[in-house]
Amino acid sequence: MAELLMAQDLVSYIRSNVVVADKIIIDQDLSGLDLSGAVFQDVHFDRSDFRRADLKDCYFIECGLEGSIFSGVDGSDVLFSECRCAGINMEGAKLTGATFNKCLLQQASFGKADLLDAGFVESVVNEANFHEANLKDTNFVMSAVHQCDFRKANLDFTVFSDCQLIAPDFSSTPMSRVVMYQTELRGAKLAGSSFQMCTLMGIDLEGTDFSGLDFARTQFAGSKLAGCDFSGCNLQQCNFEESDLRGAKLEHVHAPNALFCRVDASGASFFESELTQSLFVGARLEKTIFTGCRAHQTNWVGAICAGASLARMDLTYADFSAADLSDADLTDSVLVRADLHGIRDENARIPDRRSALPLDRERQQSDQWRLEQV
Image 1 (cartoon, rainbow, N blue to C red):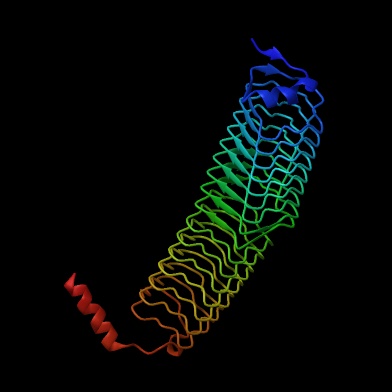
Image 2: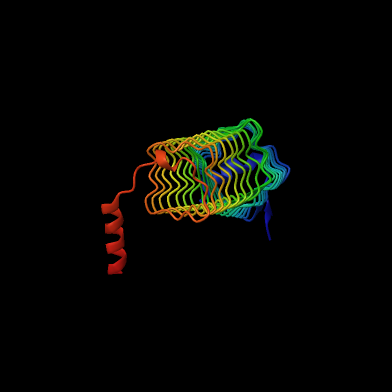
């Protein structure tokens, strides 16, 4: 049976015992105490006040901390493992290097807390408040992160791996080098946010409205982006390689030097976008709309553009070698020095074909020879 322990006896007890275990210390005032280095196992601290306490290097294992106040504590390198922390208040706490392992943190408050290099592993962090918190280099791994407030938090180099990130509020939050890997992101509030040089790989973002956001140099490789709205976004040097962009809206985007290699963007719209020197090698672009795009020096080698609208484009120096342009419409497009070698062009409308590079018969014979060797 757990033993009741009063606050005034706790410090002396810690100094004479290696581990504080099976104790009840609920509703106690522990503010300002030096508890550094202590190990607590199966201790009930519910509704206790730890304000300004020194908790450096402490271990809390299987403890009850529901409704407790940790605001202003120094909890550097503290470990919370399998703890019940619903409603805990850690506002303004120093929690650099802290670890929350398999903890229940529903409605926890970390507002303005310093969580530099902290970790949340296999934890439930639903409805938590991280408003203006420092989450630089913090890792969320295999955790449920539902309806959390990340407004104006420092998310530089923050990692979300194998998480459920449902309905987070990232409003007015600049994100730099954030990593979201194999994570489900749904219902996010993104007004005024940005994602510069982030890595959003292998994640499910289907149907998300990203319109007007800055994604410069962000990685989307292998992600589910069908039906997403990127209208007006800055996608300069972004990597969408092998992503699903079917039916996505990428109208009026700024995407020079972007990678769309082997994407499936069938039925998507890039209407009047800046695509200079972007790569569409091996992409599926059936019935995709590129009308009015600037696509100078783009590479479409082996792309399937059947039925695509490529009208009114600047395709100067574009390379369509071995691309499928059957039923495509290139009306009023500029094809100066464009490479149309080996294209499929059944029923294609290509009025400016004479501006393209002349047929290279030696190259054509070489291609035929290689086919015969297969």
